[in-house]
Amino acid sequence: MSSARTEPIKDALASGEGSLAELHAFLRSGAPWPDEPPPKCIETHASLVYLTSDRAWKLKKPVRLMHVDQVSFEARARLCREEFRLNRALSGGVYRSLTPLVRRADGSLALGGVGRVVDWLIESLRLPEQEMLDRRLVCGPAPECTEIEAVCDLLVGFYRRQPQLPDPGAVFYPRLLQDVETAATHLREMASATGVPAPEQTVDFAVAALKTCREEIVERARLGLVVEGHGDLRCEHVCLTRPPVVFDRLEIDHGMRVLDPFYEINALGLECALQGAGWIRAVMLVKMSYAIAPPSLALLTAYGGVALLTRARLAANHFRDIEVATPAKWRAKTKQNVAAAAQLFAKAGEI
Image 1: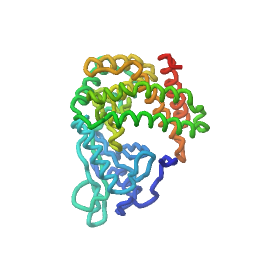
Image 2: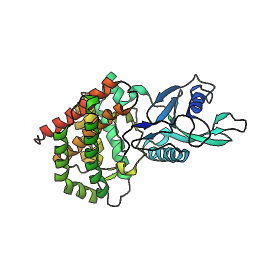
Image 3: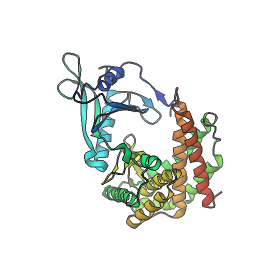
């Protein structure tokens, strides 16, 4: 695994059909949507998202990241297809289409139509920002219990529709151990940048807790309780519309979607708790327990510790960027998640 977080591609897209700068200038100008003002653009490490009045258009950047290589045109096309497929299964009609960016015979760019395909955009409905769970937790109004229960109902239906996987325990358990090891390594590497000491003791307890619970994890997998889930369930991926929408399912690695539903539900609840809404975790766990056999408290604690250390690692890795946006934010998130993991094991009597 590369130690550099991003490896930007300077000029040409791997397809040889133009530059990212050219495609960005075309989309940012609003030329594809002449009846609207130029779109707002949101940039992440991996994508550029253009927001029109009622749509979001995602363009994958030709970059090589720690977790995914989308340098080539073929890789981006494959990842776009996979993201669209996976999210149609969970978010239904919110994901509308895959739309090609084409080079017309006269050399101009166009969104769709006749021409040589130079890249792809994922078109989805634009969800109301004020209804995103992360926004509601910070800005209000505070989520209502019925809204959280509706999210649980949506997820339960989704989990129940997943087909049986061959030997999922052989995928899920080693990945949990690997997640802890990766978090430990990265937090150790980034300690000088984050100001957060490597949480060696907490890591040791997480590994010990997983090993103690190994047989339970394997048994839950045997019973069909380890499925192909969302893979990256966070507050920013939940919209509290009526009905609610859960989106941005992880497309880059099938193995990261093989999990116990209680792993990602618990992780989402812990994220809410860090925003002062611990009641959401309690509601979600109880609601899910009526529909899906719950894990033991020891296993739930192990799941939580792994998730929190992983979130800490993701926050710390922002300091691998050449230019770190909002460094105070990522230091705070690293420290907060490391402390929460230690606290979780302390409450369980492990420390």
